Image (cartoon, rainbow, N blue to C red):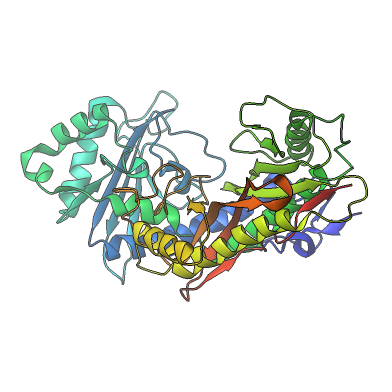
Length: 447
């Protein structure tokens, strides 16, 4: 069946006649690039100035070399740019609300006209301006900084935050030498610039991300069904590779290898390598989709019905209900300006008050699978995550609500069943949490 792209995924900036087939859910690469370029434009024109002004920084500098890019690079460039050009130095200078943030590229392209790409004063043999190179590039950079005379020069150096530590030692040593003592004294390490810029979404991204969620649910629903699984024959690896292949067939990618695992009564399955799926097994998968520079993260539960069963036993259903309740508690405590560690502590306190035995390890999602922003616990750090958990939650950001609840199952002689769930959600600009699509409230069933 052929549908218009707008009807299928509600993507802006496409003609009404644009159509896709079942194996091209987001249109052609060219159509996708046009959408991504519009997202980039809004991020640079709206989000970037807001982040710089919120942090009180009037100049932000990112320097990197080809194949050793800053983590922020992918959020600053067009979809047709795959790597830094030789050495690329981006300079962002805030000239105030009236003139906006000046965007300079000392090396590299204009990214479709979004940057002013500066070149050498000399020309190559064919008459074109040469690209900036070597020591002359650093001298040119220093002149650009002196002419603008910023109060502060922010760079990406951090001991705690991976997304804010993109300036390599070699680049920093050359940068400080070029700046000289006077300008170097104005350099500050502002971790929130990189973190907040990467974390903040633009509203136009949401329809695409919602469609990605739909695809994740559809693929998992098929994988955890008789269309893929024959009890007593199919292995967990068979399901994993079916899911991976399905992504490729749709022209999509993933940011991690899919996993499928089994829990069954009376057996510790944690060290089992690709077991055969049997009736009565509880299934779990961890699955992500990458498309248009965005990443999803989803974990669902399934159940393989025994002969004569039409639904999972009550104890197994109770396990899923417990993790659903923990989701409610976590989202209630995720509030604007509250840190990830504070949200974690409040969630765990509420969880214990309700008698749930669980673990919370939620994280931002977006440009990266484990994205920039506050961590709300790690599976092995339930007392908080120093540094990365101290970042506040911002409206207009996305999170993977990842957690598990362990519930004794009477039908399994009291054996604990871990219901591990993960769904992507949005902290809206109004400050409330909501699912981007929906959460799983019933097991996928294999009959």
